[in-house]
Length: 446
Image (cartoon, rainbow, N blue to C red; front, top):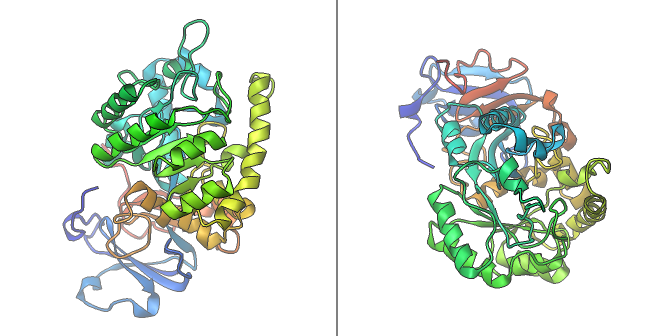
């Protein structure tokens, strides 16, 4: 991400900074909240943040616009490090994409991006389904959405989690989700996976997504099966490190797949339902992240719409996930918020994950917020620019009408998200709290 001076990019109507005061500040680092805080938005960046009594009284703030937030809480913009914007969630069926023009599928993605941003997620990592063009369109403010990091594809071997080829010859994943020109998902040799990782780098991927275990929804496998051989995982990690130092995120549910991923040095285990104490200790020692995707486990698939085998897998493994998470937290495994939104979890409900992390993992609300902000930013490699309310960081802010430390579940209700600011620009202002701030809208009127 490019750095640029706030002075050169000031975007307020009158060119002056904006002081948000009479606010409770939760900065994302895990530090205690500042009950009577103030924050300075200076163009696209945070100019200052801290107790209101220490607010600087120098020439740089003379003429600043001052906005009283009436005791509302300000958090950093939240992350969801595991989403699938190309998938519809419970609002539809991925199979519908087979009969839709690509242009129509793209337009539906734009709506999901907007909804996710408006509900408090200012950075999202899409782990299969959209390409670098969406990232560019959001970065250029052509469309509304969270800042994007994209994996483009998900790699597994034949009969693995990325293999949705059906008996009639149709590749369900490619037909319903993939965009024309995207690198394929199936790799069966070490040489193939090396070449495919390079193709993903060429396609603009920000990270590499592998599937080392079977999955709940995939037709040919089971979560306890090894979905990608260890030598192939090691080759992918090596190539990703050599080509831009890309992190590797791994769908891994069963023990065999988790072990192959952890011991190959990946950055994050996505799901990690069957983690053992030994593997937890290894992850903690390596500093690897767990992305538990608890929200995805809260809704069972409709038995009338899925094969019996898929329904049975979902019931079993979702319970395992919920029972496993607390042991991972207790073992010191680092955690980042991800929801798998688009699969069974709905787009825009991402922050419900916070309450589930507290409920199933025993995290304090403060630690859950850190997992969704500063720690998630570290996993994504962007902690030097976003993820906390720190002077010099990008002004990504969520203004909420509740105290999330007293009621963490409230952040999952869009009505409590009173305003969202991204890069110093207002994405949504439901409560009108920023109407007098002079901050511009996110997407310019053309």
